[in-house]
Image (cartoon, rainbow, N blue to C red; front, side, top):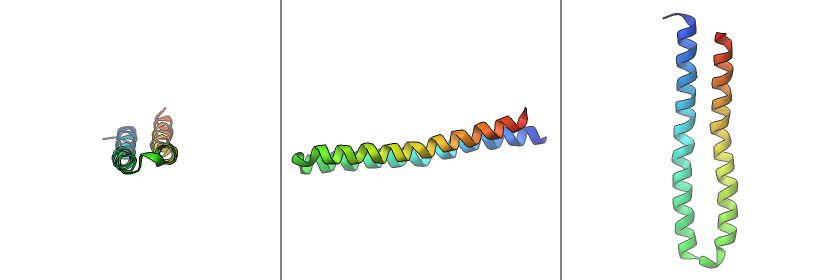
Length: 77
């Protein structure tokens, strides 16, 4: 396998790995937030706001992985 093939493989793995962890964390965070809202419905607005901010940070990790993959693919051409 030549260098371009390895770079392409690295780009694919970067996106895959950078997506798995945040997706798992988002599912767990959403589950815990729904549980917290069910226990304390009066705090739903605060919990929802905190959840949205946390989801944005988790999604940023995925976007960083995608950016690195784009940089790797740019090295091929």
